[in-house]
Amino acid sequence: MNYNHVNNNQKQKQMKKTVNRYEFASWFAEHRPNQFSPIGRMELYDMLTEFENGTGEEIEFDPIAFCCEYAEYEDMDEFWQDYDKEDYPDEESIMNNTMYWAFGDGSFIIQQF
Image (cartoon, rainbow, N blue to C red):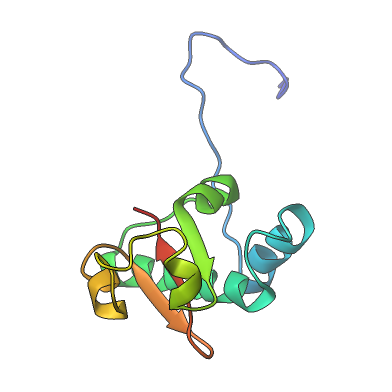
């Protein structure tokens, strides 16, 4: 059987890969080292896997999409550089609009909106 042959009449199938926390963080460290902090990479993994566990919905490992969809902030002052302080004066107002994951000393990750 020739596995290199692709039948153009068939739909292209995809194979899923399960990654653990270390593999997830290592990908970002190697390919996008400035996208998330070392702890932020681990926290993003925890946030996404908790979402999977809570909803039963699988998330495909698509790190480029994660880079576009999620952002890490060291504190509210950094967040307010991207979002209006009057509209989002505190963490609760952010949580009312998007996924929010706090960690460390005031750092957090959001699903960008």
